[in-house]
Image (cartoon, rainbow, N blue to C red; front, side, top):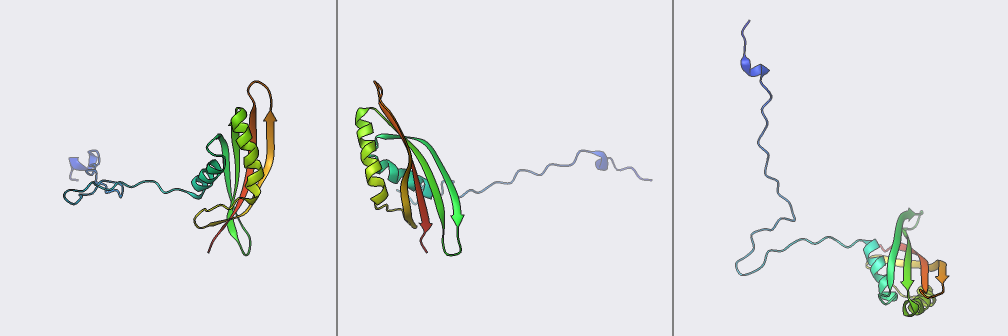
Length: 143
């Protein structure tokens, strides 16, 4: 029987292959900057942005839950967002937010806001007036 010491040696590790990523800087034409990829904004990002615009930037985001749903004729997402309005001026903006939300015309690309409601309001008075508003939006995918 012949003895081959190479069979007992540890397996050879292949040299790591160079990985090409789409976000890597590519060679840019002379005199221009390399393009960098930026993350895509999701529907949830756009919903949060639209709500913050309606709240005039005076609310803090506490939570955002997103659930997909579908029926025989429609598909979309349900968004439940809790916003925190702190201080007397912010609470006044929050009250305007509550009044405007159900009739507000949202512009979210590829989506139709079928329903926008206020599910819950927790308003605390005192030295540090605070209002927490829970809004629910039902979005339909446009096709």
